[in-house]
Length: 404
Image: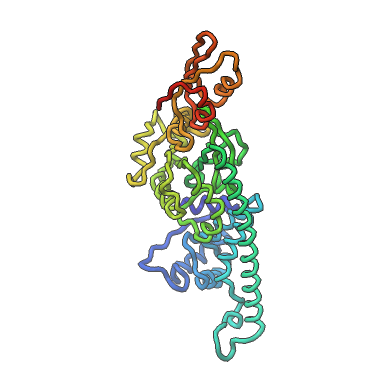
């Protein structure tokens, strides 16, 4: 319920009151039953409320019945999240994805006002202008969905081209994933120096952003900030945001960001694992990034925090790093773990011997590798350095020895 209230506030609502209904099974007509509906009417009148939000997805019949009884706007969890996404979408791609999800949600709920427009079966009394209007609306929605899907296919084609161009160069892709409001955008800004919106509200970042970073080994990598996951993420959104989630699926490494200070951290982590499984990214190497350690009293230990948060050892990431994206604490350790974990363009220790008069390859080595020692011997310069495999290949003519 606290999460639902946070979603409502993100959408611009003021939460007047929260209530819970406990039933053996959901009421087919109103979800909550006639007694709770009467209680809700009293609360609406007392607070002069204009909207009631349910944490469950309502069927079209339940929503229609509740609005008729309560005489206010009734929203379910999916509609609330769709509204937030519509507010947050900035790029053309994001707006198309949100509109597609909204139309897929609206289509089965498209009914006319009044009994005459809702009788669509065969027989007497089912023909007339009501049916014509309804069928016209449905046809228009189907046509719009088809047009959006064609536009998104073009976007996916562009993303595929961009991805192939990136893969032609030995640059690994790192994707930030995690529960919404875990601090992914703050971490992204800290890593890359980007100006992505970092807000305490949920789903502050919707459109993906990609920037490059330089690791301690001087390897370069691409980092993408993605939409936050959430409990019971609507399937319409998962389908619509497939193009965005492809950045997660195609990544060589996932930084799974967790708000370690949250009492719900274990549950949030479980939901992220489930979503990664659903989109086909569960087997991608991960680093558990325990964010907001500055809000935890004392000197928290990353390993102990990880054991407390991870309730499913089978899906446990290879390593954990405790950081504060806000203050920068723990960043050196996180970058070191990223360097160690990235499989693409692995780093190795090499010894090179350059002609003392040839400064260009030596300069290039200093730019793209981490030089640990330099020795001059007559007309040659012997350099020991930690370099990516791609740099080693380009300087193989100067290579003397190598070791892992």
